[in-house]
Length: 597
Image 1 (cartoon, rainbow, N blue to C red):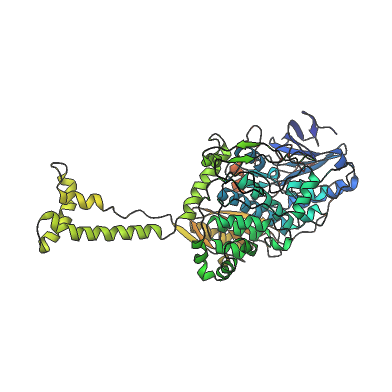
Image 2 (image 1 turned 60 degrees about the vertical axis):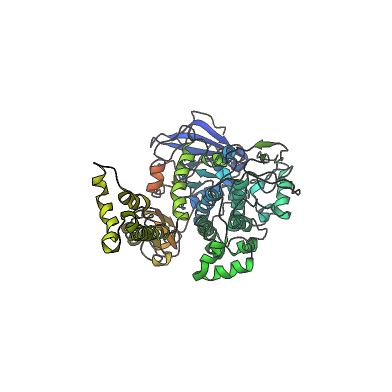
């Protein structure tokens, strides 16, 4: 079936305009004629849908993907078949993919990169817990909403695609620039493979190009297997470089143990807590200065501050445009250097370009982007809120206030007798008396030195820092979700639930994010809780009754209330229809550069 504008799939989804074309099919914007909402429909190419066995596997994989109920995963609404061609109906998510942001901004700050890594890792962790491996993690499959939230798309599609025999010469399934070494050599992909691909994304976001390039997909895949990644520039904080390099380890057992540990490490580095990050991902330690000392400090929770103070975190909010990293070391990379042009992203080409583009003179321009870009505005607002929280110690303002108070008292005692010309007890009390009456006197006469100096030189220490609350995951794990949510709201926190399948009883709290740190009052706490054991799944070809859609997160509904004209929007939770096979949430990819779209 060749999709065209105006045709209706399953008697329900009317195609309006094509959004993107990828290696696996086409993505169209469509209107749900029953619910009246806009959706995204991915129609698979004939070479993938002509095989009945493939369609059966693809249908079952879509059902498993629909079980994922996580704020960071764009789920599937529906699945159907039309004239022998399978299609997926997905959520139309607002905001561009990360690939479009990188095309525009070239490089991102370390803090923004860590935020994307942490959010993506949380979503991957939920999928891995259900036994789902993405296998095609790349910028085109990470959507960034106007509020800076990351949504991972296309779960399960690459997993099925690599089971289909291909006859086209030289065709490589997936995107070679982001393949883990074990994938490039034909071995079984695991959750660690997704972590490696996310490491490539982090590397590219920091310096504007991927770690490996070549004249063909095969050459790039061989580089992934055999070549060490080029070092990141020294202008990037050392702990951030260490985390990225640990994710790019050739051996899977040298990478972060799982996506949850990776998310914890990234969140710790955003708080400039190197010891906690190294404890979560020990693979960072060999890349840190004084690796043995770092390991010792990371193992001693009571002395974690020592490692944190020894690390330079300057430049966390700056972008680091660098010159091409090569064997020569004659030039230094700065914020005004030329950026290397990334290798072609077209499927099968993968050629590296010799030219370069000029980086802007203002490094902050990359971070802020165009002020008219809603995604940039949303993210910068979020970044401003988190920057003050991570850089300000809770003792800063109390210490400043105490010092100012001491200075005020000392100046009053020492300068009082000299300014009034007296001595003893009477003169020592003069500054206090004159200071209290200075406001009234100043309305009718010129103030004397004794009335002005104590009030102008000694500020009143009334400013205080933001109120924070210590959130410890161990205090809430294993308890009922509703009880935990009520307690967190009583502390002044915003609460959002993330339900996953787990062996624990339904409603049991599994984890909190962020946790084990001081959290500013009013911040969002994501509480991951169990939905109960995994139900027995079957994949009937013609189900009599549609499945019940998962309840949408309030946060996602509010974020996607107004659909942009081209990138789309999420609406309220879907309702079932006779032509649908299942309901959940997912999203389109953005450009032709993503072969697995």
